Amino acid sequence: MSRAVKIAAIAGMTAACLTVLPGASAVAAAPSSSGAVLIANGLWSDRVLCASPSDDSVWLGSISYSNPYCQWIQIGDNGRFSLFNLAKGKVMAYEGGNEGPVVMEGLSFPTPNQQQFSFGGRERWGASALQSFLDSGQNVDAKNSYNDDPRTSEPVHTRGWRHGHQMELTWNVVPVS
Picture (tube, rainbow, N blue to C red):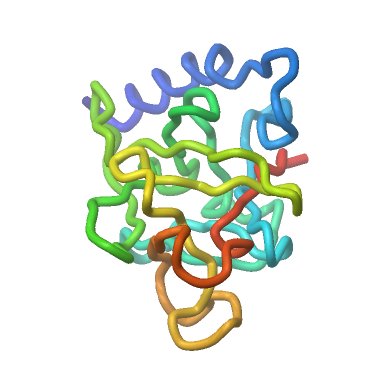
């Protein structure tokens, strides 16, 4: 399937998939008119998930509403969705393994579990775990592997909820204005 056909299919699905249901949490906030959102960290709200422009890794970047590599379209509801990156033309994926890398892949139909994620319950600090649908025990982690700072010098990986702090494993959807 060509990239143009995939983008057209995603644009068509986005309107139906991004509908907010009554009683849904703030994580499911209505997207902007363009449908693009940022995925902001629950501990470091000035840090967002961004696709690398030079390879297929995912990085934690500074919040920027104008950086297209940090803009995503959530395809599906909070219980099971894919994150399509507008600039990259690919979806975020987790291929498995403890503390495995989060990468960008070409969108596959039907969408395999490694290309899908879910939001866990809303935590007391107002954010939700971003869990791999392939392995819900693995959450997208914003914490540096070497200290308690945000992960800025290495690509994003996953980490189990049971290990260490949890705030850096949580995320919020922020509409792009």
